[in-house]
Image 1: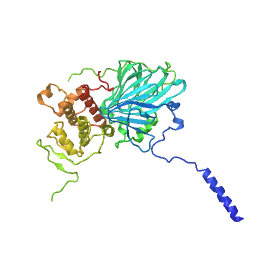
Image 2: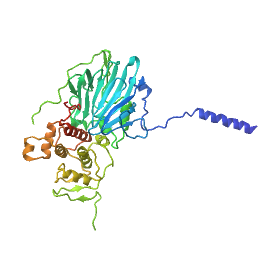
Image 3: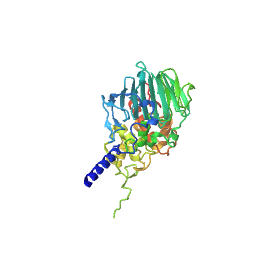
Length: 279
Length: 173
């Protein structure tokens, strides 16, 4: 009888232990793919959309931040990529990506970008967040299919586009943005500027020499050729960058630098980058 | 007894007399330009070994050389690296040397002084600054990884198109 009671007690305690021991993912230094609930940005809501590789020329590779093996894989036309993918290109290379049914990005040579999120939400609104670490891209956003909230983040600014196109670059010489159609908004800690078709802008006065001394995202990369915790954190937080501005396509704008109800300034664009210079 | 220094072999250079230090230094094998640029981009400075690899990739699309010494000899034979330079695989690349090598590799037409005196680090740097390939700074300042990537890309675009891209990466069609 005593043995039976002991056996029952053992069984009861064992059941209690299993019930209180939830299975959890092993912790790693790399943050989970989804941000904490309290910090979850709007861009993470909605249906995930595919990123299709339209064409590839030259050396180009991609890596999924969610991939624990951490391998860079060759990129090929027809590949379908997901959020949290990093792409890098070599000299003379070019990659064209189709983001859902709404936008197209041409990644030029010597460029590294991260696709932080691509989602479709209510009212067919597509939200996209892309991080440009170095190099340049041409982006074109089609508003005929529905509203867009498309942002490109660089280490010095955040650019919002809506039904528009243009070129963005970031290098040791700073950031440049050229509008080819529609309107971009270039938001930096020092202010923001609208960039229209045929206009240019930049980060407004960050000398290339100062970049090395500042805590820029590009200085915190992984020298061993992977993706660093910093890069993954920035990607998880929708592309990183120093500013943010949401232009929601309904004619109104709201900036995280301004209180609701304020309008942003719409100054003229910066000067062209190709002015003459005395030797 | 012949003693080999801990830093590696120091090889006498060719006719120009420039010394090659750490000539046997190696780099990651089979590194294509995308991986190379990514690795370099986050470095605060660029070693001369990496710099030579970058110039070889710029000219040939890939680097099949095993050692720093081999890269130096290949670039010297093409007059991209000056024969009288003392080079060190682990030494930092300076802006003057980068400007000289890029100028020689791209065969950019220079100004009056370059035409009269031939290429020098100082005037090659000025020429590349004028063309917005390189930013402000002196000949002896070390080059950051990000700048090296940008300069290589501009040089590569110039070789292919005859134009240097603007800050947004655009060239005239």
